[in-house]
Length: 590
Ligand code: ARG
Image (cartoon, rainbow, N blue to C red; front, top):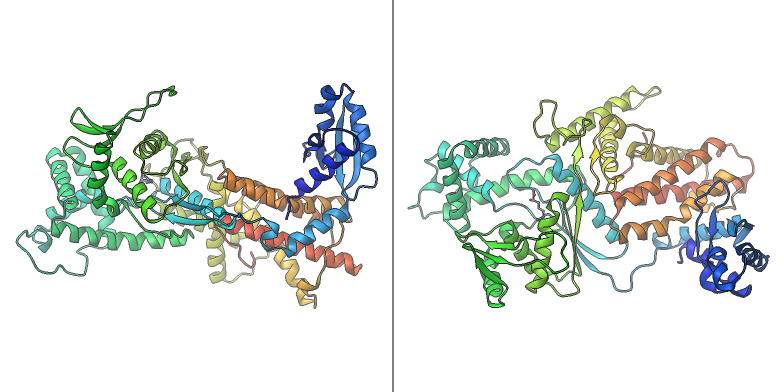
């Protein structure tokens, strides 16, 4: 169904035409002075020159043409020529009735759905997940859900970092500790054991140890590089160890992402495209794109219009080793061949922006993608601590994702049990705390424009007041509790019908709801989950204002009471839809 703004604009355009003016002048926008009106139109101002008339006169003509309108209850021409508008409550009611009936509240599904790939998460195998990976996971998951809700075919790929030096480091350290392991016996030709020779906690200790040693010990680093090389070139025992590392690490990653309600469709990684590299390189050479510069194989990607220096894209190092670039390019090639997406969105730290600019240019130049394939970089800012510096543990170390999630869960639990009138059993309080904590974490992140840095403030994020996830969930819980009481008293939720708004706060609430479609479209088109947060914050505020002014359950006028219940159902459904696309859920009660 049409967006409310379009319906309203249509009425206004018709009025301009009837009054003898260009219909295009009748564009309506949401009012920026909600104290004066709900919508506004500045067409009379814009038309003044064309018609050599004072804008106020044009506005007055339009007011006349709108007499008897079924859309507007009030059209005021105000100096110097603005049109201030209010909608008829009956019109708003009808609009919401249709929203409630239609699938997805009337959002029009695309005629030609796009195939969209989202490259997000991007954890590095065997390295503990840290908060930097959190943002990619949270934002990417929401971007994926938004596009899917809007009717597109969306595939999320985790793009594991599973082929780099960290693998060589782990293998080297293992060899130091257990040189007798069969994996290191080059003569060995039998089957390797099924069981990995380490656990996840050992693995998590091995990597930082190895990484630390390689920084001070050049020979050790040399060994690690050699191990990486051997692994990539297919040495059997090393490949077997790599499988073990993957086995142990991926299981742990899955658990972590599950806790965050982040679900990938594909668990591919850099290693998956290793074998595609030689052919890709060959093509780049044959096409005349790649050439040797100071021993390395590079592709120039600078363009005449550049205002800053864009260095060439390095494809192979002088020793023939591939790079982060190379795997990203080969991954694009692989995706085009097997999935053929219309669009690939990369949700990565914004510090990698230049890098992706090079990769995208190189992919276009070497024709790895079709000319119409969209490659989009969605760069996000840093999550900082209260001191404005990248988030650290109290001891100053890198904050692990698990610890962060643990901390926020605990804080939420403390808040929940410290409430007066708390009668929730311990087990339920724990479960509820987890659900609410996830909203705190995700909303705290998503409510900021992705590209901006933000301050992780556990106290503010977990607060039940203000622009926070818990505030939204409290609002939903409040609605659910009213609806539950209504049902307990014998009411039926599907039998109630919306009524025209009886008061101001009720009408504003209805108008907020009516903006759902336009908001969702905007969030999709601009890959901007923060727009959904802003919308539900506004909606929750409008609901709470209405709630505080209205005695819903004790209302005597039956149809009015039913109308309110119907309105509550719609608010609940819209709020729950929005948090679902943001990637969290609401508990039944709080
Ligand atoms: N593993 C990378 C890192 O931790 C992020 C991967 C981003 N995605 C990509 N296609 N390069 O920095």
